[in-house]
Image (tube, rainbow, N blue to C red; front, side):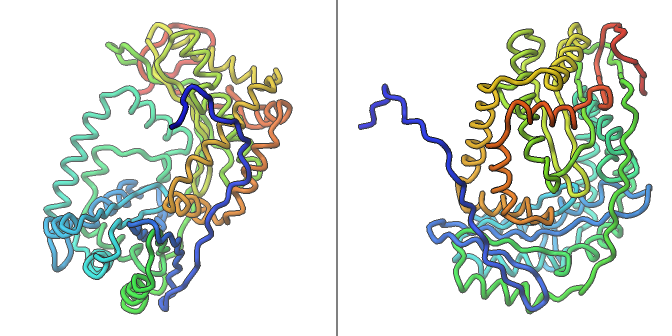
Length: 440
């Protein structure tokens, strides 16, 4: 019997071994990556499509998200109800997902049901009808959700933050307005579907209990039978222009809390400094023991939660600091955030603090590899950025080599409070620390 009065022995985390996929290519050129794990009962099959960017300021930012949501809402032969009933009957899950850069469709199922469910997915990817009735329901529901969301301070702050950090002429920076939903038509979605949901724009990742017979089925249905267009239109890169770093303040008359968002564009995962930047961000606000949490939550009691994050996108990366605080301490919170950033740049961190963050980040990496699906997710993250699994060895090496001097160097290189976009929605006390620009 385990004696829980005795603490487990401390062990250093060694090298992390990531599973390499088996790479295949179907006859239609579709790249396929297989993560085999016979002990896993389920299989997950992901069809991943790159989102195109129109080189046009009038592009509707909601088109790709609407297409993702409506993919499985009907085909030429099946209604949305029939599709849902068949998926449920076989105990499977069919999940469409949308991000700024890719749209995907993921099937979770048992091997023995593949003969029924793979043709269903093929039907969705080749014969989706996007019924007008389903589109009308989607538009109505999402307009109602938006009308509710724009009453919330944190949502308004996030909208304005993205507008300013990327500019409003691209999908990263444009945020939905009610008129954007009004402008979506079925013909636009059909055109986008025919353009993007094609084998030449698809990557297939298969993980779990992947039998030989399943691979043969996949190759027949999505290699031989799925021809589609052999090429797609040129994919444009979005033009990203960070807006003013002046303080942007939107007053909400009856607000009890203020939503705060600060940040800036920064490097993405492909940059050699990215692991070190993640380390410094974690120390500042990336975990429960971070400096921002200790200062602004634990010591000052200004908020229940505050955090910072570094995110990577295909064409850029960004840093953001997020919190909600009482209206009477909004200004004081901004001052404390600035103070913590400046301390990072001017004062060496203690060795014990650096070691704590190392242990946390190494443990987080190890803990994120709980199943074969996790290994596939790690691979997908680097694949979509044009990288290999060698990145994670580099990442772990950089984390282990962090020192107080390196923390200070990275802080001075990438953390500049003055240059950050600063957004507050709620209320703020008068202060000569910030320049207020009221926005409507």
